[in-house]
Image (cartoon, rainbow, N blue to C red; front, side, top):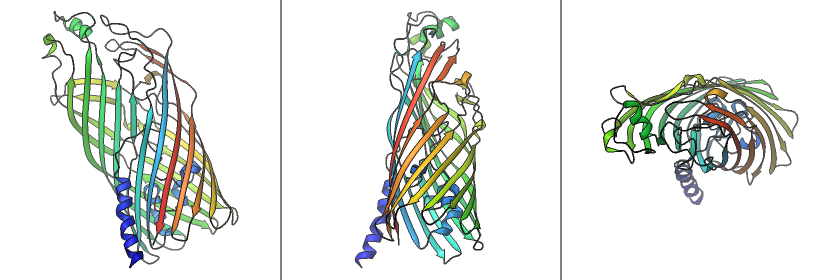
Length: 437
């Protein structure tokens, strides 16, 4: 009776972890988040679509559930700390009639927690599995100081995606397993930037707006939409397993509102508060992974992941009439990621993890904005697992992500020119509890 009570308590606890306050910092290329569990963090998520070590495989490859006996619940939290700096090269400008900016904007990054939770169940012994995962596949948060030189391009940018992913897996035979899932996804976004009221009034020949007049425009919106994912694992030999996984695009029709602060009276009808909309097509991903057991102690991992970021060409915020509140030309390109990792099983209790990854940015140098000053990234990862019993295991992982400086050469008559360079350094600390029953 006591054990049954313990099990019932674990499931709502895991759900509570997964439904914590969602505050995100992008750690992968673009604004994707690879931190879907903590057991893979120590390997830089190398081989994630093939390793299928725990119920976190529901996100990476649902076919991997066929390797999990009985029922299993996983709760994980990753703490991501991002430092983003801009250095003006002295050639940045503001729109005509506005007061020149002061400063480089400070550190636009911050620290955030990314939770995830999973539950898998072997429905029909050695044949059929069901599972559900709650995680955050995309997240972005940058915030520059008021009054900085690039304020007309961006102040705050926040994107948060919550993904609820019921899944099913079928073990065809001892070599082949197939899996599929449906995603119910909520997207929430907030964007703000300074508005050059003096320059706007001048361009429209509207009198009565003082020199240097400016305010802040803030847009908030959200959307629910759906997607799907498929996966397969193939046990090529007793020691080698391949994984193939595909996650579809999710097309969001975001609805929200825009509000303007400190707006001069002559511009009240030109830039009114009101409803806005935007279309966002979050990218698809395709992963090919391998896990190979060298011997009883060493396991090698590798994968290649392609992300279809070219689905995002611009950030266009429109009135219900179709008139643009703002347009930002992003012109993202498809990107790719490669990762290599290894696990060393010290004994029945402890496993050590190692990993390296290279993450190619979808951002072109000529299109890099302070909303997403993304660049190519390199991951160095370590971690460990402690198995307290056959049922209970704990994982801790740490990753340091570093990049070379990336250039900014934005030219805009309405927002000013922003030239200089960005630097970005990130660390991630993750913890996970796994319970099998």
